Amino acid sequence: MRLDKYISNATDLSRSQAKRAIKHSLVTIDERIIRDPALKVAANQTVAIEGATIQHAENRYFMLNKPAGVVSVSKDRLHTTALQLVYEHRAEALQIAGRLDIDSTGLLLITDDGGWNHRLTSPRSNCAKLYRVGLMNAIGADYPAVLADGVQLEGEKHRCLPATMQQIDSHHLSLQIAEGKYHQVKRMFAALGNHVVSLHRTQIGAILLDPDLEPGDYRPLTCAEVASIQ
Ligand code: URA
Image (tube, rainbow, N blue to C red):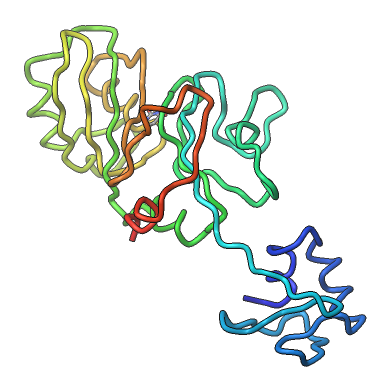
């Protein structure tokens, strides 16, 4: 990682303050003064500012039980954002990995690790997601077969990947999909002539929404949960 970025990630200095400290010869790598903010720092090197060693912060990963009414964007003038529910140091570095609509609830992953976020959300990742879906009209007998075939969404060139469902009652089901197209679940049921009235995400890959988390609560991911996203 570039030296100026390494410092701004690990301390309260902004990137430009870090650059200034480097230019003023205040920064050393392995006890050698470095004046190039773009120099790459290796994992085994020691960076110090005015002689004080700085620790590079590890990446951070959280799961939030998103309540309804909260938006999955980093800034919004009207609504509470998911990031405003995460009371963490340097929260501005955090990003949402895989959005939920304002009225959807449940598992939302948040991280400052851009590579991990990309692996999770890239269209090629095909990471399975599990939703509990409530529908306005009763579930059709043909739904399992139609979903398994791949639903054709309006405005999309290709059909969805096969999805699986398990019926809970006449109007509720759990649905597993492997993609994350825009409003995918709502559009899938619209294509079947139905309407989603509630949508709750319970799982992404091997990461399950912690049942101890009340709506609006969050917790750090375990190492195993982080490592499960390859
Ligand atoms: N699909 C949707 O339509 N909405 C969500 O919030 C998530 C998946």
